[in-house]
Length: 240
Image 1 (cartoon, rainbow, N blue to C red):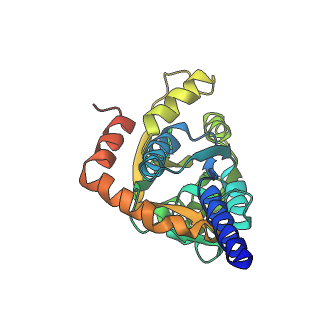
Image 2 (image 1 turned 135 degrees about the vertical axis):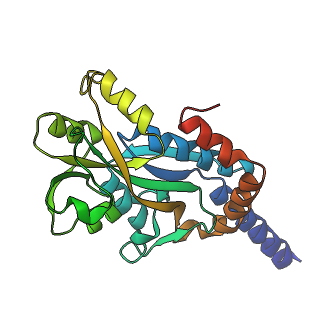
């Protein structure tokens, strides 16, 4: 009888431990200095976790550092990334339902400069964010300056050190407002932008928290169906 009670106690403690582990906040790595784009994804991802009752903690850090932190378990998840990371960061698991679009734009302060695709930039000097893997891959072999922030990137363009910069969308308008507030832009600049590529973004979670993949996927499916993602996108682009 004592043995049975002891085993029941062990099972109870194990159940409590599992529940406690599930309620430990998921530590999400987000990209710093990318206010407009990351804000949209943050709204969507926080809502998905809220719907499954799972607390989260967001930490903003350089894009490249976030990839390493999540893959090694120092963080538990990546806020929003593209499938191109999967071959390199093998501990990350994609939540199947997309959290929304991610586009890459070429932006220049030269009105006459026409860029229609990645290859059109081969003869140009280009500013690219370090850790934006697809942009780094697509511009391999070109005249690229890798930088850690949009602030440095746009400052280089204003100084004539690069012809064009590659940025993410949605959220271009908030990003430009933040750069103006930081004194990088004065508000009189004229920009020409063009879409280089349209893609779908996904939330990634470390394999150690893989038990959350199913619930998060169901939450995102419901959010797509009930219009939450569409509303968040309108707001990110300055709509109502």
